[in-house]
Image (cartoon, rainbow, N blue to C red; front, side, top):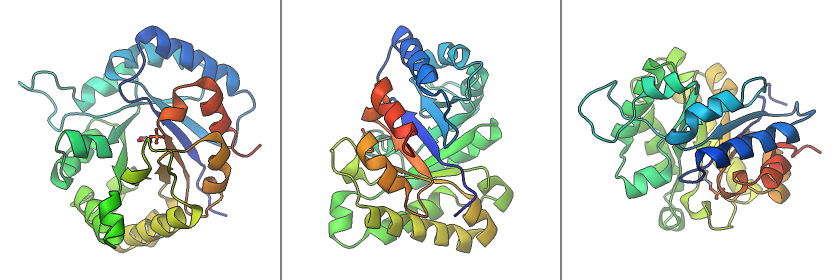
Length: 253
Ligand code: 13P
């Protein structure tokens, strides 16, 4: 049994107005009663972060942005800095999600700069990585993940790396209803932890939380979270409704 407390995180992506955010957070707060098994985090869109920060007060819910710009400020129309996210009351930020990599051309080098920017702004990065179906079928899973992990965390001290949460999200499992099997998830998480141990140190690797994401639902969460190296879930679709998100948070019941 590891000492890592599970983290159940909801990535709301481009969903929810301010009012919908408040309704969902209030529903989650009510449903959380008696929850001790897991830490809980939500990542609403930027526009709702401030309101969400007010709504989570008095609860244990944590708050994250979904992206940030790598520069602290400047002439970057439409972008949001780490400091701005921190300023809303958020404590975490998702970085390198496969949708950012796929649709917005984010490379390992850019992800690396963004992780640096998050740490500089006092935010805890939730650093995402994952292989596509083509890469898996071609037998390239571990090579791709190794490159993403080493590239994303290049140049960090062990002290900095110790703050980072890793999220393994196989691209083929995101929004498809197709979940990695327990064996597939465990195999990758074990590999990532081993690599963290090689890049940094064993103790750091044994303390780093590695979340799984990709079609996590109330009915598969318990099995996935029973894997020894799976330390939580990064949930998309099922985090948008109170019942399904609470069902995942209460995976142990
Ligand atoms: P789904 O849970 O909808 O598959 O999305 C996973 C995800 O991308 C979370 O970041």
